[in-house]
Amino acid sequence: MSKRIVATLVIGAFVASAALGAVAMAAPPKREVDPAKAAERISTVFHVKQDDVCSLQAKGYSLRDIGRAAFLADASGKSLTNVIQLKKEENTWKDVAQEIGVTKEQLKAERNKITSERIAVRYDGNASQLRTLHEQGHSYGNLAKASYLSQQAQKSVTDVVAMKTDANNWLDVSDQLGLDAEKTKAEFSKMQKMAKRVHKAKEHMQKQNE
Image 1 (cartoon, rainbow, N blue to C red):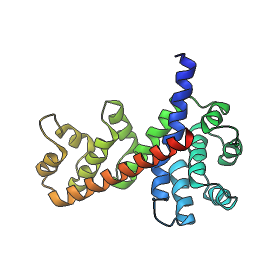
Image 2 (cartoon, helix red, strand yellow; image 1 turned 180 degrees about the horizontal axis):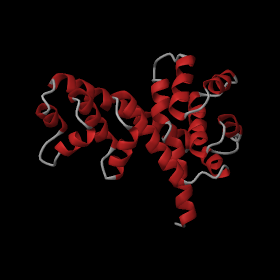
Image 3 (cartoon, rainbow, N blue to C red; image 1 turned 90 degrees about the vertical axis):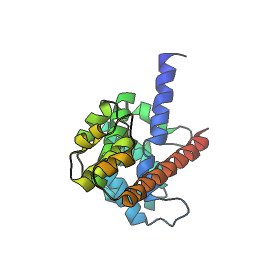
């Protein structure tokens, strides 16, 4: 398989999945969506104007398409309106990404920024610090748990990450920090449910793109 084809597949995968965290939280399955809250969420996560999101919703664009366009707009520095206008019935979002010249490196950086910011906002952390830890090999799933424990114990996330070894688990770390085990389990359960929701949305979107 040529490098060009591989790059195309990678870009397509990023565009299909990277925006799902925000869209899934803005529009949970089997629940009526508040258009204003959905617009606010997309605006906050992807750093686009809320008025532009509302305008596109009024024109009939779906939250998924607005989320994809917003993701590409934030990654490329182009306006949301200009990006979404490039999407036609006869092309795909990966075609749009290639047309505006977004590279897989830019898409990866954008996804890391969105994920780290989401965790930092929820647990009063530092997004840049989380990205550094991620680059050192720590998954965002583990960093989310470390961030929660860091917030509750009022310790640095770096110190909390260092407490996790191959010989223990995150609940053990919670116990070492003197935290309430049931509260920790409840928060970890919320994280797991959100991850499943995003994964389910990703599978659904991939089927739509087949």
